[in-house]
Image 1: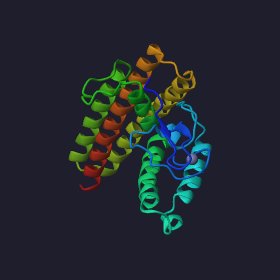
Image 2: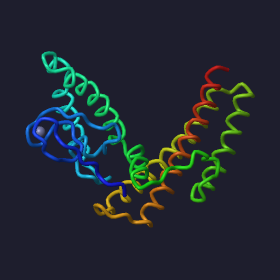
Image 3: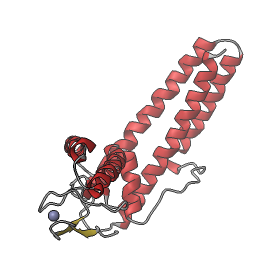
Length: 219
Ligand SMILES: [Zn+2]
């Protein structure tokens, strides 16, 4: 896994992980843009995080970085407050939801989801086949002028997909909980990649359902 970046405080020279404020003297820090999102939020570097704590840290830090507090500060402090606010927002958006958090965790381990998600994940093969068939049926129903019926059919597909979505999200949570700190586990990494690919594919299917649904409303 990539190592956590160390920086030195500009005011008191204390050496620490890249954080928004110096842990020794509380001075605002010039955080490098590639700083680790977990340390930006002052959280342990682990994918199974406490979401309530994450939200609390985010709001606390947002308040502490408010530009009004730096109006009389040096230009560097003002710049740091803007820069850190942008970084904090990026970190929070990435970590608050398990899916982007999982993708970020992959990146920290030098991996990435393939951009070409055309291949059907094997575990979803049966579902994908069924959904395509049902979508065609709904489309035929719509073509026959029965828009309400088509919407009802689409509702069933949506339910199936959401059930699968919950299952994959549970898998993701279970994967996260098995990581131990500062250790790369190839099996877990591969399993994480598989689950995230399946989730990405499922979202594509849901978009197809929404497209068909819109078409039905516009009959
Ligand atoms: Zn300091």
